[in-house]
Length: 464
Picture 1 (tube, rainbow, N blue to C red):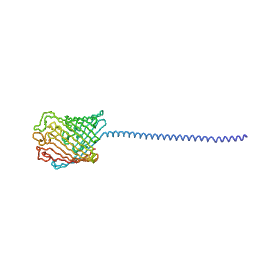
Picture 2: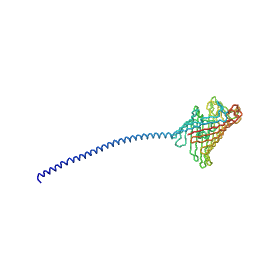
Picture 3: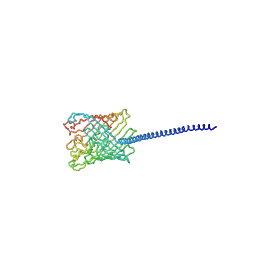
Picture 4: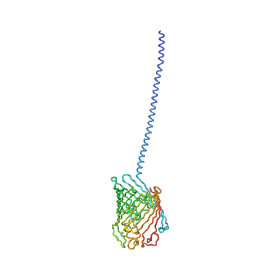
């Protein structure tokens, strides 16, 4: 190859080399730019992801805060619900209409009136049981005539042996079966004549009751109550507690025979003190009853009672269900006044001590699921030492207060639903008569003959 050709070839190679170098540099630059772009995009995405994550975290934190608030609110609500479950509210309304069979018994501005409508009981009861063995009870009787307390007491049952309890305040007198028998479940319109007209008329007293429920093999229940009470009922202004009561009760069910049995025994003792200005008579039927006017003389009275309740399954007879027979007997002596047989409440009262007796027998028959028939015979003798014309005799210190009474009660209960009951009852009263208590006045003043004092009563009751 000559020199000229070689020069031309070298020049051509140099041109090619010079043309290829910028291309390579451009490719590198493009790669670097792409990488930078990708990094920037990645950084942007990472930043956006971080912002999104932060936003999500904030939302999660907010939701968590709300959940925590809801949980706290739920726990508070749960606590409130638990506390509310410890509080039980109960109530009773007994609205009545009665019809007197004899207009002569009605006195006042409308002597011809034979019918009357009124509210016999309007009860509202609250019971709080916190679950630590304690119990708080408050009950009032709310009627158009006023507001009367029925129960205001606290009870504590020891949690160790689960045997003993102590109860203090205004409460049922623990004597007999009737007094503590709930008015809402009672089959009759009223309790017995004895319970309604003697020292138990209030049914309540203020004091302390000690209870025991030992477990005895062969018995479903054995309970004992011992009470020390003021002795003046619901009259809280009087201060001289001297009323002692004891009651023993046992129950035994025989499901195979369809029979249930409950027996009870009660003991009541009361004392009064004759203060200056007072007097005391033993009204025993004699024409010269023993009297004392000595100041600070202590008097005592004692009543014992026995009761029984027997339930029998009568479902083997068409249309019949369970039947119940109840009976009670009271006997002893009481301290009262000349005009009534209730507990005296004044220090200056002239006191009368009388031998008393009362008893009743009741038959209750359930018919189907909605009806109930009731028959009761009730006797009360406020002074067993006198009878008939001996009552009111000169010098005996006796009066109409000493007359004996009996009563046939016939009733039908219709259970409209679980809360509402309709009762129709007829009371057929009979009184002891005495020629010494004759009177020309109308109504119940002439006690030389039978007083026409029968009563028909309709009652609608709602209880919850």
